[in-house]
Length: 101
Image 1 (cartoon, rainbow, N blue to C red):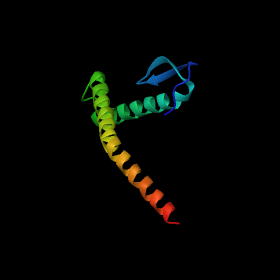
Image 2 (image 1 turned 135 degrees about the horizontal axis):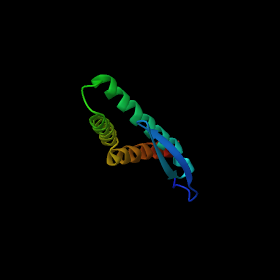
Image 3 (image 1 turned 90 degrees about the horizontal axis):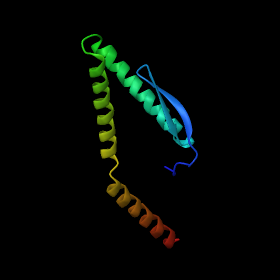
Image 4 (image 1 turned 90 degrees about the vertical axis):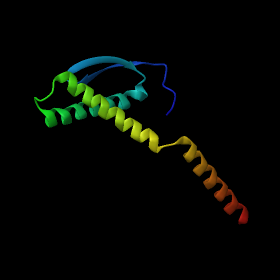
């Protein structure tokens, strides 16, 4: 991801029927909007699943746990050390193949 620009843009995110004004770098807007959509979709899932069985605050906590769990699973899938080793091997293989020609 590139460095965020120094210019900031004010946007309003709607999460769980609340408006949150945030000041962000323009190139980050898509990520903020996707994050808000993910949160809203996750809350919607738990709202439908539990309906009136749990309170609003508990719905937020369930969504928080869900999103954090997704993050942890994804971050574990992309071990930088393994990626670096794989890239180094591929680079070495390509260099060897080019030298043979």
